Image (cartoon, rainbow, N blue to C red):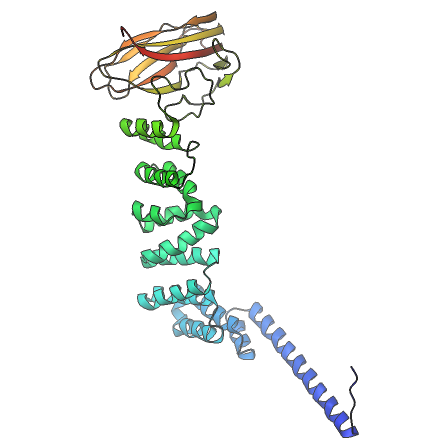
Amino acid sequence: MNLTFRTPISKVAALLTLVIVLIALIIRSYDNWTAYKLATISVPDGLLKASRIEPGNPDYYFLIGYYYMKYDPRSGGNKIESNYKKAISLLPFNAQYWLSLSQYLHDKGESQKALFALEHSTQLSPGSVSLRWSAGMLANFMNATEQVLSNLNNVIKNDPSRRDKAFSLLWSSVGNGNTISKSIPENALRDYYKYLIKTRRSADAGRVLERLKSTGDDVSDIGYQYVNQLLTEKKFDLAISEWKEIYGQWDGVWNGDFENKIVRRGFDWQIYGTDGVRIRRVKNSKNGKYSLKVEFDGEHNVDFRNLVQFIPVEEGTDYTISSYVMSNNLTTRSGLFWQVICTDSKDLKAKSEMITGTNDWRSLNLDFTTPESCNMIQLILRRHVSDDIGQKISGTLWIDSVAIKKRNQ
């Protein structure tokens, strides 16, 4: 592009204009640099000087207000609110400015103004997870339930890493399980369910599980957690009903042949870890493909009660527990045996014979009669601590084909 000047005067005028613009830009840049250096060298004096050099920069006013609010509220006085409002007047669409003003107004006791500023902040930046998290916590201090739900559910929907903290805050702030459960977004339902199980809120976990079922979600991978909680709380009828709905009808011992993977919860085998013992499902069986293998390392005198199953029964009824076992060099005279106890009564404590040493596959049975008001038993593989000189147990036991049936029928 070529510029043509008709007279020497016009040429000089153009050059002067260019020089003036360049000088203004240099002064502006110098002012920017000077204000920035002052703002970073000292607080709040540097910020105050920076705001005078650059009166159109809203950040300096915001930072002055923020400094006094956080570090010197007594001497700050009206400086806090006036600087926040000055920043907002220069940049009214900054959500963080409004959020900080809301915090100040809440601390000052002006609840309605604080709530207005809070709502304005979230309206300006509805998709900012970090801002919505801060807004949710502030709303909690304000006892503003609707704002707590709105802000935290946005966080829950968009930031899985903060979900557990958000769930806890919802419970401490809102406290109503029905209200909270209805507000949880669908993509977070499974995490919320796990939180409820972890915090032992079984009734609320059940409601969330029903909601998951209603969406067509396959809950077979998590339903056993709820059933396990119900068993712990001795809500047996509900536990049985849920298990049947999710996993199907059954009568007697669940997965007694160990052909299915053990989930270690609910009405499946519950396996608890302990030093010196390894319990696992292996391909070595009396019937089918799999059995359960229990190995002792010979370094511990184990008080063993780490394999358990809950089994629904009828009261006042004769039963037989049957099983096949095989053992290899089970040491000490204190061997392994089946024990049956009634979950709701101390009137039942039956034991099978004890297995020690080395045995090929053989039957290990146990007869018992349930007392009145006994509708749930626990079948436990047991071994008592030994008083022998060589008391540390080693060796291996395999278990297969565990079943229960009524006698004389």
